[in-house]
Length: 147
Image (tube, rainbow, N blue to C red; front, side, top):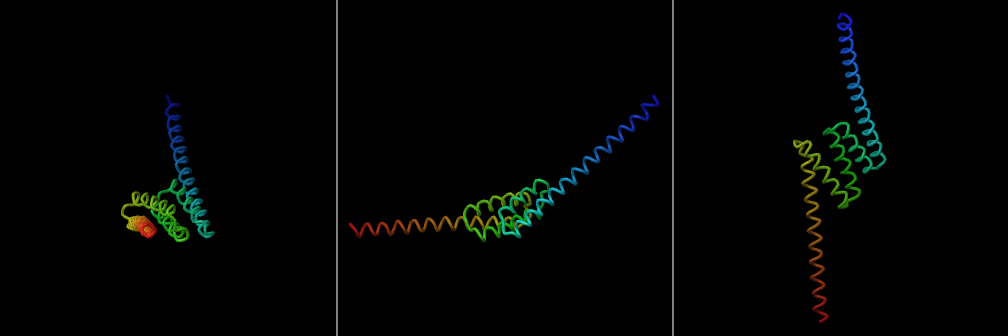
């Protein structure tokens, strides 16, 4: 009976110590991985590799979801979209800003950028339709002259 009174507390203390060790090592590991991803992203930005930086920042979100990381993703997209003003980049940017505004709905910058990108998308589509209408109108005038 006396042996069990000593062994049970020792087992409980050992279990408690092991669980705290597991918790602390997991936290340290997550933080280390997060810092490694953000450091790589910053190096990529310095090298002008904005797409790669965005991917590193997205990977860092697996370890820690923070508003600051989404802000850095936005800044990287701003630089990328300035360089590569394409519909593909705009749509990726729009998708990520939608996720950011869902995660952090009180951040107005994410909402404003999402609205700006939508307006840009609509303006581009409208300009394309206007050009098609003008082209078709010119084509009809040309056909009328030939007949």
